[in-house]
Structure formats: C-alpha cells, structure tokens
Amino acid sequence: MVVAHHQNDWSLARSFTAETGIPIMEWSLSSWSDCQSAVSDSSNHWGHISVLIHHVRAYPNQSLNHSTLRQWQSGVNIPLDGMFALTHCVTENMCRQGYDRIITVGSFHGVCSSKSACMTSTVSGGIMGFTKALAHEVGTYGVAANMVATGHIRTDDVDRVCPNILESCMKSIPLKRVGIPEEIADLILFLCSKPASFIAGSTIDVNGGQWMA
Image 1 (cartoon, rainbow, N blue to C red):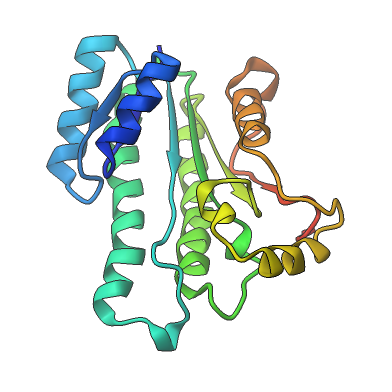
Image 2: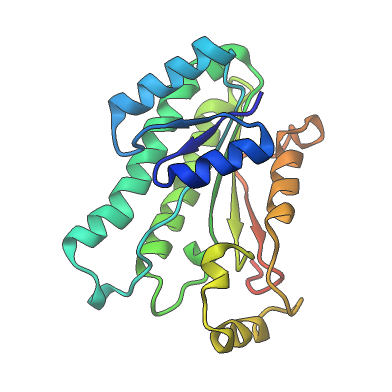
C-alpha cells in the first residue's frame, strides 16, 4: 500500500489520487506533533510503514545576499526539521521489523553548488550527513538509509525556467538532456528491493553526468 503526503495544493492532490488511486494525507512537516499523528494514523489504518520516501527541498532557492533571516528559517530549518521529525517517528517500529527502507531525495547541489543555490546546498548537504549518520544508527537493525541526489529533472519547476537558461544548463550535462521523474522513481524502486539490501549510507547521483564524484 502506498500513501502520499500533501501540504499545499488540494486540487492537485485530488487530481493525483483520481489518476493513481493513491490516498493522500495532509499534515505540516514543520510540526512534530503533526508528524507523530500522521505516522500513527497511517499505521493504524494501513499497517506498518516499511518504506519512507522523503523529498526534501529548500524554497525559495536564493543566494545568501538576497535572502532574509525569515526566508532562511523557512527554506532551511523547516525542510531539515521535517526530515528529522518524520524519520524519528518511523524508525522505532522499522528497527523492530528488521528490514525496512528510508530513502531521502534531495539535490546534487549539496556537493556541486552555484551562486544562487545557498539554501538548496545547505539543505542537501544536511541530508547527506543525516543519511550517513542514520545508516550507522539503524543499519544494526537491518534498516537501510540512502539518499538520491538529483540534477535537473523535468518537473513543473524546470518547465518554468527560461528556455535559454535551460539550454545553457544542458550544455554542462554530458547526456545533453534533463532527466524525467520516472528515472528517479525506478531508482527508488530498486533501492526498496531485495537486490539493493547491501546498499546503505550512500548518496546516489542522478544528474546525467553533470556532477561526477
């Protein structure tokens, strides 16, 4: 059973559920009590949570000198606090089961930044460190934690980018294109599978070769 989380656009959420049949729950990731209630309600209604897939992003993505303290707190603290709270709420039961997965999706800007990616770089760098520490902590119980670090993926945000800017970005991508969401989904499905059971604490780059570790 797959359950999705929603926080902003109910019309989009309803369209998603109508198209996929996947139910959506709404809660604030910035609220510890909301995360606890959501995990408890989900477990009671649908059963044990065996996989947590968490997409963490900073918004707005701005340079340091163009950001206020309030924007920083919203763009950095809330995503990282939400990642901590939601992960904290599921790990105890996951460790009891002895075979579960925690996959956090972030940006490759944690290791390959740009002049306008101060918040995204901070959040993605935080995810990488969190994932490694988490993998050590829960790996003893058979739970694998990994991160997927994405480059430019064909989403609504990318589609809104000026064509000239997007074309310039693609010049730095060896594969000469942006990725598609299905490519990220397929990787996540693999990380959830038994053949990936020995992968833990890893950051897997999916960026068309734009950044090579």
